[in-house]
Length: 275
Ligand SMILES: C[S@@+](CC[C@H](N)C(=O)[O-])C[C@H]1O[C@@H](n2cnc3c(N)ncnc32)[C@H](O)[C@@H]1O
Image 1: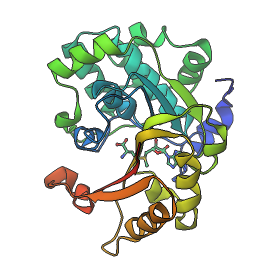
Image 2: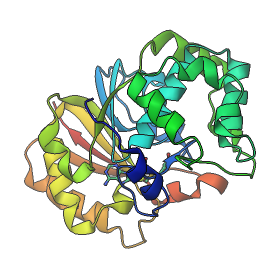
Image 3: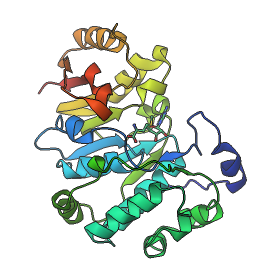
């Protein structure tokens, strides 16, 4: 990726509430990724997923995707994703969990996170220099409340990840509304979680249609909303869209979920290109 970050703009824009090139990245997912990754095909050669906290691409690898490409509107999402991938290749499970907890914890300065020096020096220079220059800025969302450890990889999952993820993921810095035209590959699995919540609804069909061009036969686009109301607008519109296209089917999968993952009660939307 040829992007050269502008530190001064980043220091200013990172405090904006709206998602953009320098918006804060989530440090740890707040989603139940084990549930939505189950909709990946058994054989998944190529997957496309939002970078977010880096947990989405990691869980894609964990559930069997051979190659994972990530996209995000925010450069900070690439930074946290690369930090996690490199930490995975540097730390044992116990140290990784401590690393993520410290990263999340606002009272531990970013550069004082235990093992941060061992990870950061493995980053490409542009990214290292950016993180160093922004070390006092809130590029990652950090909290003083305790972390939901259930979303972190177990020892078993971590071992699997260490075997399968040997390098950082390809990354596209892009607004999802402009991404279709930039893709050069086709995918077996496109995972769009908690993004359409922030896309203006008049763009839904345009975005989905542009991504459908990049789905292999048998492949799927899986979408999740946090805020979809009871009227199920997205589901109705996707049903119509699939009906008009040859070889596509649409399903809404109802998921039993409670407590912290209550948003899943709205279900998971699956568009599938039949073989
Ligand atoms: C909506 S956030 C929520 C975090 C998520 N629930 C998690 O578990 O990490 C997901 C990611 O989508 C990115 N994003 C938001 N709007 C976007 C857009 N229009 N195009 C591309 N990425 C976008 C954000 O930068 C963020 O990293």
